[in-house]
Length: 394
Image 1 (cartoon, rainbow, N blue to C red):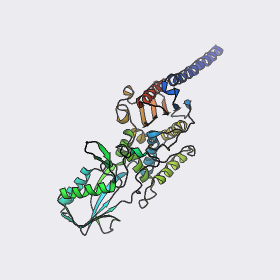
Image 2 (cartoon, rainbow, N blue to C red):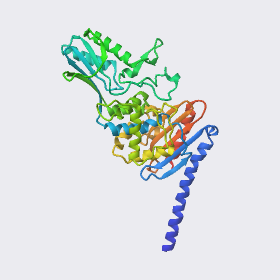
Image 3 (cartoon, one colour):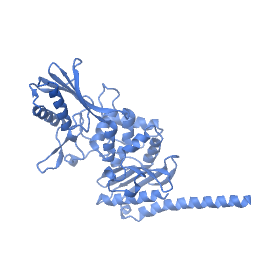
Image 4 (tube, helix red, strand yellow):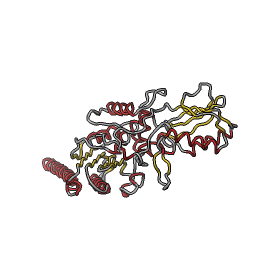
């Protein structure tokens, strides 16, 4: 009897293994039968989030452009460096009728925020300002990404980024469309002057860059929580936020200046500490806009497993898009509460990466990159949707 029971267990296990193999082969069938696969490169990796075991892989070692899926791997670095309680605070000080402004590079700062501050200053009796000194040392003045395309200069999705971020560094043109400002600093100063004027606060002198006087007194400030900013970055795939925050995360101290290169160094340090090699990827920005960026889906899923086991995971996963939200607003509607992901799109490039809970309640990580296709991005997105549905069955 015992012999038959053991035989039954062996046969049942083999059947399960064959079922798993069959399910995985369905993914190949979906890819091979899709017209995109005839000309494009499709790379895919799926792992068990708990064990790290590879569930499925295809072209997983190829270096491809991650597009905005890169943000999914930048945001945990920012969260680790700055902490979930970090605030981006713009502060206003006064001393001897001089107004001092300490910028934080806050990507969510708006004209309305400046108006509130100026209104408060007026209520505190400030009617005249001799001059304004702005401390813009939080990050450097490099405002455009390495390898960004020249014809993206007029794209509202790729505005210049700066310590002087205001209204997302966008303005309306004569047609009513949003376009990037030519110079964020000039834009900030022009709006600041106009806001002071509207609040009947007279500016007699100039506006210049400099340090905050140690004798100055804090009058007011406006803040945005890091988690609020990170959610907008990941869920809406916000490029300006990504570039600004990685620079800030690169700072070694409050007195240092944040740079992209320093942020990338912290990116590599973070994943090295998690036990991941970073020599097999190439990163030049935080947003994924640059065509110079190169990643492997194998590395991406390995990283997602490590993040899954990190202390900040429960905070991090809530920054990602979910069905009906952000870049997944019109995707995966039946999977609410079962998929958390980051999309990526560039010309001829599409990507999707994140976490999914399968039909059998397994928690898997996945990464899909499609490169070198021609035509409507929706075709690549449709393929990603089909592949996620296949992952659910694994």
